[in-house]
Length: 134
Image (cartoon, rainbow, N blue to C red; front, side, top):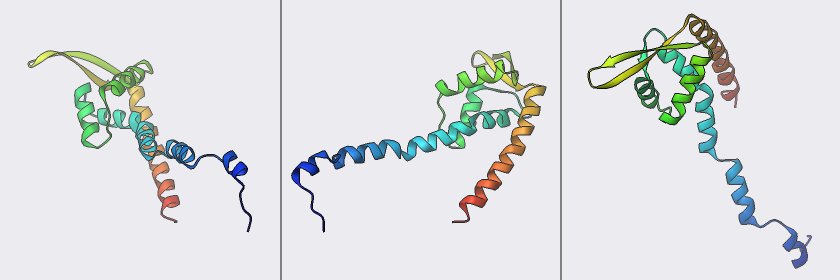
């Protein structure tokens, strides 16, 4: 059995520091958030498929689905999707406040969503094969 001298022990990383670093690396909440972010664009396009909605409705649908999205996340994403030509918007008067910006899929957005549907089905099938083979 090999013993560790006090000098060698001091050179080893402290257990608490190592544990802290490990927790930072393996933060499951961070990983879960990243997984949600990865599918957020697809979810927004799917929500808008067939029906125009304003941002609050999109946000509510995502929250109901436990996507845990905040307003600060959705507005830049809607702008990016619009700038990419996947969405358009129109202003509509509201009886309960200021005018609302309603988002709709463009034809390009519909084609893009169709491609994402196929990709999602393939990804889901592949993931199920891998995770169920444990």
